[in-house]
Length: 494
Image (cartoon, rainbow, N blue to C red; front, side, top):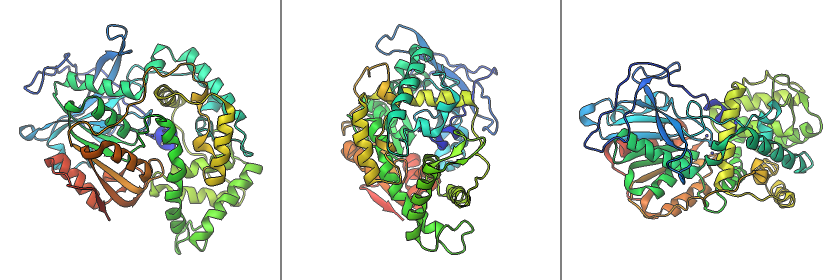
């Protein structure tokens, strides 16, 4: 869950559709397009010059298919070798709240030629994400801080502030979010993808879902199994059919614990210019002591949100930097500075209108997918237990998000992922992944049964394929996409 973190903010900037040459999509033997798409030049820098954008009209409420419509923005880079073209590969972004409109250019460049030649690469800005028909709950600046959006309890474990924030932010969504905010959900994201498939004139789609996108990909493969071709699920979420995104949030407890020992080894390595301690065993107590000190005595941090480095801001920064080992020096530098009572310059933030849009989509998805407890007493008990068992995350993963006061009830039950459908899914997962821990991925693997096999990388970081995984894992996924060859059983890659 791309989720409400530094990473989510970075992937949130969406490309728009601007006027350009119009090229209608023609029907093919694969299927008849449901509408004539007008492909135009995409707005943004650093894009593949072949990338074009369009919009697909979908129902706002699938229970009322003849009712109001919304637009979903779609992008495409055509297959490199039309003579060998197999079909379309749709890249499902993380989040919830992330946009994948630039993915055909950005992620597409990392794909091997054998894959790029075979597929039109398709990106999407999911419903609610600009430049699709957008939502904005109109939250104030203070509510856009990561330690408010993520439900960090007070230093003493109190959840009263979280419950107040839940009411305040949910009320703002009810006032400002419009009707669309009620219809942003994983099921509807899957239905939108099927509308895009039809508009493209494809009988079947190949999928590459990352992080929260694996949940959408699993949902699509469950709801529309006959319309899937080759499916890659990368950095996989717990598909709990009762808890849904509450299980994803809880996964941070084990995810942080999985990664911290690797960070500690790196942070104690001789010769490391950002070395924190002489031994790996010293890093954890050092970090916990510093977080506790900052709980008591925050350091002013102009330009940050909030404008102080407190214990929860340090913990949240740790989580954000644990997504990618390349970011560990940033965390170490912050720890070194804070121990001296100083701070580095505040990190740059995306524009607030982008943050409000991204976080509004994220909140609506999480709250509409599953009902959350409404009583503060339930969260107090859960937070107390979490703080005792997992001090690095200080109770946040079991605390109250805005969903504790969400004004709407879920309209449908969460997707129950099952093994019914074709055996065409390849999962790829790192052993040490803060955001989507291996323990949750194993639950998705079990739910899919014979439909899937899983490649587990002996690697650390989020996003396994062509990012933080292994050469063996990358080759296995690329071979599957290019040729359909899939391992006969689950494998581990060193």
